[in-house]
Image 1 (cartoon, rainbow, N blue to C red):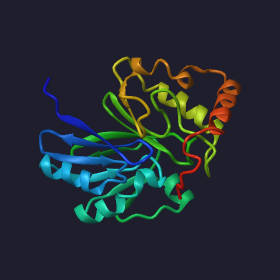
Image 2: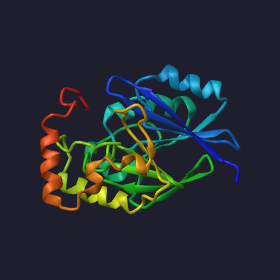
Image 3: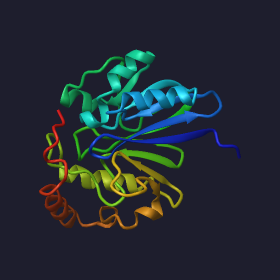
Length: 225
């Protein structure tokens, strides 16, 4: 079976962010996920690959995932998608902004995505799934999960969201997180076996571990809002 889309990963910014471009190989249309920090590089990829952006998908509202969304939305005259809960709670503003609900299915660039509400890191964090690929933002990383001590974060919600995501994971699922802390920021689910958060079933243990890691997270001095 011929491959109908490809995923380009751009490592950007000072906190190891990942911006993703999902390209429809049939019509050369694309979706940009969490565009931030390096506008010139993103535009250069779009030009060099001869692709046309058709939409932007945001996993949450922290500016290290969103600070180029407005400029790109205006430049390419394309919609920007984020969960309704995230938009309303943080009063997020962006050109061409559209609200998403949990379990929505949207088609952009003739590619279908499932939208999964996964609160915990923020009130309305959202993961996006296309076939066996899932973009997890700051909910799940290779060896951890997002911290919960920023405004709107909640450890109980994070526990439930991790359990929710696990239901969608199979042996051939590729996870694409919002930050890279290792050589390969994404990979098949087997690569994530070392992620203790995916393997904890006791909420009290999960919360205790999260609280320890929140106190020493590397982003404490980063201004998000």
